[in-house]
Length: 295
Image (cartoon, rainbow, N blue to C red; front, side, top):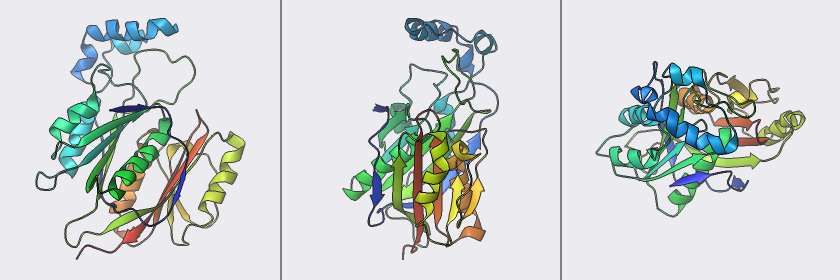
């Protein structure tokens, strides 16, 4: 299933999610997919873009540049999953088109991920797609519909058409994946989702004030991770901040969250991730608090 466009903006502030954020993996995939050299790519892309008056990017097509989201996501699945602990829900998020636009990648991944999970792909939300995926995973977990969920954000650095207006493009092919579990293995620490906020339609001048307001009630020892869409934002007073690398507009924030999760110096600290999508003015913030290890 593919979800296009933004989900309604909401604020979750209630009991912690049953799912604990327990593991993460980020990767870059150098080079280009053999699919980028397929001569049918030119024909397919031309057919898709012609009705909108969008020109092809001849340099990208001639250079056979581009990467496969299936290839990126499969590496993340191999790194985070185990056949003995099957996944119930898989959420794939992306913004730039795949090098193979005709493939339903989320359905393909359901066939290679342990557990043959229910799978969704979310697109056309820019940096907000990952936060919408969190809402979906949380909703399924609260109805006992998912004991284990995998979120995979992917981006590739090449477009085979010229965007009709300026767009944020990655500088490399990357994936960032996070694993949530309702029943982690004994002794595995994790962090439970406590709050999830989404504020739409902000102007650039309003972002700093809105971010400050969202962060005002975070615990004092929170480490705030600023996604690439907030690279130039003024950090709010209070929480310690880290800024994701700007070259990965759609995976950078989740990679930063994964790095913080794996940092032994941040063990026991609450984490928050905020990101802004300049295309829509949407500002999102998610806050996780440490959960007790499973007995």
